[in-house]
Image (cartoon, rainbow, N blue to C red; front, side, top):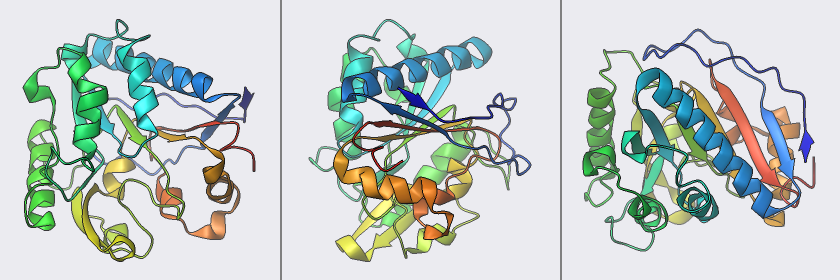
Length: 265
């Protein structure tokens, strides 16, 4: 396992206000195998969750879509199943496809099948994005209202998630913040309907103010197919990739990857 220098700072007190600009340097960890990657990610997830529950009696998590989180979910549902009181975990999503929750492409469906169905999670602790609505902007507005009510936000405030899980696409997108899309410039709304021309589809995504107000953000990456974009994201500040704009202002930024994904570092 290889570690890069990381100047860690403790998470800020639990506040919903957008914190003073104080971007953290990323903690980059490259693991020899995918098994070690997902085990370490699960350990970190549970450590952060245990501390959040100890301090605030709840753990707020924003899950990611894609295929990579499946193996993390499997670790959490098996080896680490007893590490958290799952009835004190609240699940949200960082983005969603513009599809109903029972569609194969649904990020919610994947998480339900691989993680949520494995634990006695109360139904009102699962706050999914309403991807089935015909208007993605309406879905985004409803989810923003969900966040505002759950976190008791005043105007101008942003939610502070305990843990946000993210992936990275071959074009450098993360969540559903794709290159060249309108949501990249959103600074006021918490959630946006985002038209993605590359895929001729709408997506629903949280925005940078939400991601950058989180206490802990983890990019989870595996596979040699991601080595090039990971190298560019972490070594070329001028690349202007969407993932590079995720910089928690008063929180921890983690990049966890297997050896093949980190081959270019």
